Image (tube, rainbow, N blue to C red):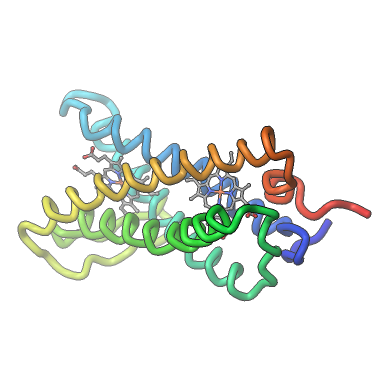
Length: 183
Ligand code: HEM
Ligand code: HEM
């Protein structure tokens, strides 16, 4: 089993990054929506945001590692798509990285605006850049909009992948799921 990407498909590491992060991003989206409506008397009032922030920080590290792996690897050849689809796919794939980075940085800014660090499951702490009154609300608004945008784009991206698999019968989805064809 190939670890690295090849011209024909994605290697094991890129596929693990892609699918584990996709699951984590959808899960953090659901957790985020749920936790902001919790009442003070809910048993999850403190633990849900704690998990959201700590998992989000781990995801930020994963994003940086994934981006490094992406640019250090051969890029699988463009799928056999119409030119409009090819350009749209390229913009969307590359666009996910800065959008996710901005989503995670805005989350970090909400969480640390009171001057307190983020504890990551007791493993390490991410320091605050310093107390900044008012930043919490502005970063919170940006965070919510970015979260909706990322999920909307991910839904379009997933629908396109399924369409290429089911209707056009190309290997686009297979090469991200099971890698390059074995021959
Ligand atoms: C892929 C990553 C992430 C996703 C999809 C995500 C999603 C969300 C969503 C949907 C909300 C609810 C927004 C609302 O309706 O007001 C939220 C809130 C929040 N998120 Fe994230 N988030 C992510 C990463 C992070 C990170 C990395 C942090 C901090 C380290 C963070 C901290 C927060 C905080 C503190 C809130 C509560 C904001 C408030 O009280 O209004 N998030 N997140
Ligand atoms: C939040 C969720 C998702 C994000 C952020 C995301 C992001 C990405 C990115 C950045 C790429 C380019 C390769 C790379 O840099 O790793 C990619 C490729 C791909 N994704 Fe996703 N993805 C998500 C969910 C999904 C889902 C749910 C599906 C399918 C149902 C899917 C199917 C694919 C396929 C088939 C490719 C390969 C496309 C090609 O080779 O041209 N993705 N994705």
